[in-house]
Amino acid sequence: MENTDKELLFYAVGDIAPDRENPSECFEFVADTLNEADIAFCQLETVFSTRGTRLPQARHAVMVHPKAARAVKEAGFNLVSFAGNHCMDWGREAFADTIDALRKENISVIGAGANIAEARKPAVFDIKGNKTSFLAYNTILPMCYWAEESRPGCAPMRAWTLYEQIEHDQPGTPCRIHTFPNKEDLQAMIDDIKKAKSISDVVIVSMHWGIHFVPAVLADYQREMAHAAIDSGADLVLGHHAHILKGIEVYKGKVIFYSLCNFTVDLRMDKAHAEGKGFKEIQKLNPDWIPDFEALYNFPTDSQKTIIVKSIISKGSLKSVSFLPAFVNKKTAQPEILNSKDDRFAQVIKYLDNISKDQGLNTKFSINVNEVVPS
Image (cartoon, rainbow, N blue to C red; front, side, top):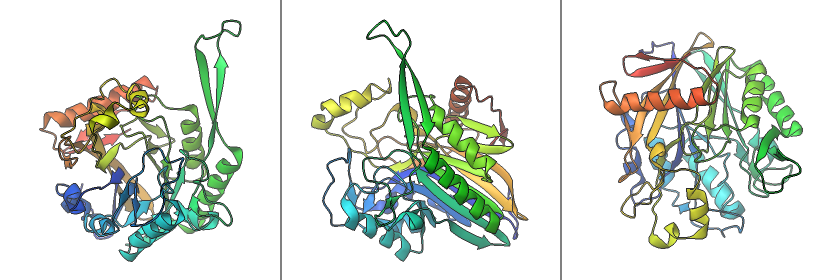
C-alpha cells in the first residue's frame, strides 16, 4: 500500500543494540526501507557513551561508542524509546550521554529523562497535517532505574507478582502466578495518554515488558496495561523486551503487538559465558537456545523471526496497521525483510498465528502482497 502526499508512513521495530566497529552494518539490508518512513521507531537496548561505572544490579551491560547514534539516524530512525532495563546500566553519566548523542542526531527520545516529568513527556510529530504523539514505559526495572522528581531514569510502569500455591497443604507443588499493575503507575500512564490525545490526532504507546525468551506466554499484567492504554485513547501499542515475537491482539479495533522481538542486537558469546551459572539458568527458558561462538547473534532460534510494523496515518486517524515479516541472520545479526515468496515469510506468520492462538488472542492474519494485516 503506497502512501500519498498527505499520508504519514510510520515504521516500528523491536530492540536494537549495535555493538561493532561499523554499526551501520547492522542496518545494511533494511535502511532503504526504513528511510521511506516519515517516522521510524525503535527500542534502544544499550547505552551510547565512553564513560561511567557499571551498576551492580546490571545483569548484562554493554557500552557502545556514541558514534552509533549516527548509524541509527542513517538507518532511518528519528524516534527512539530509551525506557528499558538497560538505560541506567552504566550510571547517570552514560545515561545522559546516550540521550545527548541521540538528540544531536535530531532523534527524539521518549520514556526517559532527567526526571519523571521529562521521562513521561511525549514526543509530538506534526507531519502532513497529522499530529501524532508517542509515549514509552518500562516494566522491567532493576532497582533505581526509574525516574523520580529529582532523579534521572525511565518512565516506570511497575507490576507486582503473587505466587499462589495450588495445594496449600503440599509443600513444593506448583503454583499459580498472578501479576497486576502498580495502580499509581497505571493511573499516571492513563493520565499521560489522555493528555496526549487532547493535543494529538493519534497516540502510540511503547511498552517494555513481558516474560523474556519463554515462547508465547503473556503475563496477566500486560493485557491489563494494554487494554487500559487503548481505553484511555491510545491507537496502537508496541511491545518490547521479550527478545522473541509474542502474540498480536486486536482489542476494540486497535492492534496490540505484545513483542516485536529483536531487530538488530549484537550479542557475542564465549565459552566462559555459555558455561556460566547465570546463562545456564536463563537458557532453560527457551528449549532452542544453543550458543554459537562464531555468531554475532546468540539468541534462541525463535529470535530470528521478527517484524516491522507499518502504519498509515491519514486525515487525523490511523488508517491501517500491518507488518512486514523479517528474519535475522545468526552469523551477522542483520535483519532482512522477506517477500511472500520466501519460505521464511510463511514461517513468521505461522509462528505468530500459533502463539497468538496459544494465548487465546484469536487474531486472524491476511496477506496483502508482502505485508500482513492482523484483524
